[in-house]
Image 1 (tube, rainbow, N blue to C red):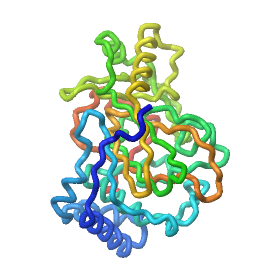
Image 2 (image 1 turned 90 degrees about the vertical axis):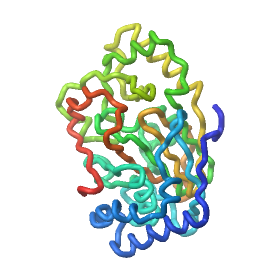
Image 3 (image 1 turned 180 degrees about the vertical axis):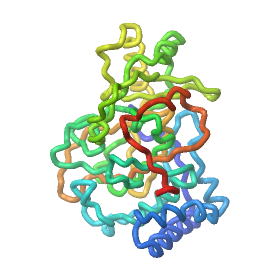
Image 4 (image 1 turned 135 degrees about the horizontal axis):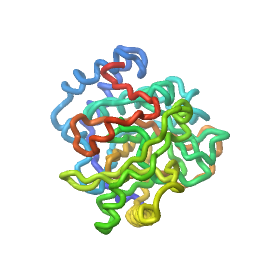
Length: 329
């Protein structure tokens, strides 16, 4: 797997100062990165940012479906120890929560989930004791299988942002774009069929108890700009699928593995992923639980009126999960 050939957008010193000073002012005024008032202020604040900064913080616009935003400086000593669970983070790294919210709001509308991390708009991704082998962000000892973020839900993000707080061990995030994969027309047609459902992952306890019947969904969807994808093999029951579909699904997995890249984020890096084109995962690592483990902050963004998904998704129940939008928080 190639290591970090991802496109890089480097913020200059003026852009970094503008972004971080704006975040600091918002945080000082509202007192908390989770303040509803701060979330409501994001659109007006973003409109006041400079034209060049807003240009640099435009969404993904290439076929590989990702880029690394570089230039922000996260001081390791100022963060405190990596927490052992997202619920114990408190205000640690709160400035970077606001920075990430500003970047997200420039690209679209930040969203959260009522059933994940207490409805927070910025999630903390840290290895947690007892979760080492799960297929969630809290795992460590297993490969986090490449997947579309929140693939089970029709209201999933269009863009996923991962901001690195700490990564002493250079643990790589993996990513692969469906538009770089080489698939036959026959396989594409197979995977456009809604054959298998995608179930909620282990981070959504309420959704996993939902009583509604899982509905099959397409894996691939054709748009005017090219293929888009909805893919999470760890939570896709394949036993009820027919042979030709399973074979095409397997070949898609092989192609995604072939074109996958490994992106080792440095503190301050923000990996921006087009969640309609790119699946992401993480290589296994050994968590130490000594306060120095890898720590990322994650934000999800919806881009309105984006023609990247089939209209049939509007009829899905979403396993009872509601997406929250920042402006209505």
